[in-house]
Length: 85
Length: 142
Image 1 (cartoon, rainbow over the protein chains, first blue to last red):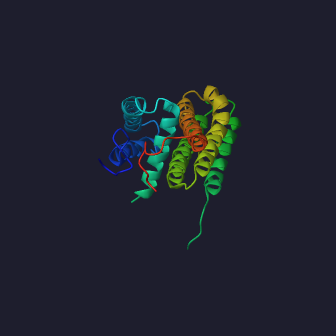
Image 2 (cartoon, one colour):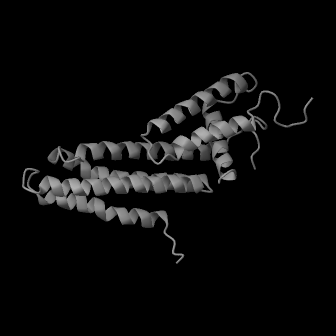
Image 3 (cartoon, rainbow over the protein chains, first blue to last red):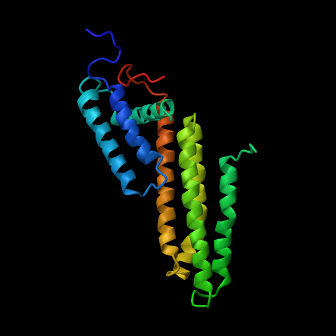
């Protein structure tokens, strides 16, 4: 059994990195009306919903989607700051 | 030279151009007066450039912001800036319907809504930090 505190069922760093990349492309887009920004946002929202349904709800039914969504956004901000070029 | 500008300085640079748009718009009785539409269109383009550029500055500051409160503040100020342009445009878009005004109104409205959404999300994230959340659900990044 792994001693990694990020156990089976949790969101991984790779998944946060992928979501952060999408988050960066819409949240900080210079043109919020661009197709690229809208597509990135749609993909981000779909990814967060999928993770919530598949990983959070089964093990943590007390966590609401709104709170999970907030926390993922904050994690994406933290990831982008930590990995700024 | 290492002079620094803060976001208020950037917003202050743009405000006179919004006021100038109002002055030019009000200075002609109608867009049919010779030179009116040309003068007004020129100022509409200047304001469009300023709104787009200032939004880009806001996005850059929001990305670099250390605190969520600071991020929310940037979007709140940018939204207010857009609102001040909309306040002028809402009247002038009817007076100058063929001088690029409705298109600028739509652009500024979309940018304002984008600011409001980002302000709301940053504020919600701030509130979320005070709520219980299971440890280990998200990776520790610090």
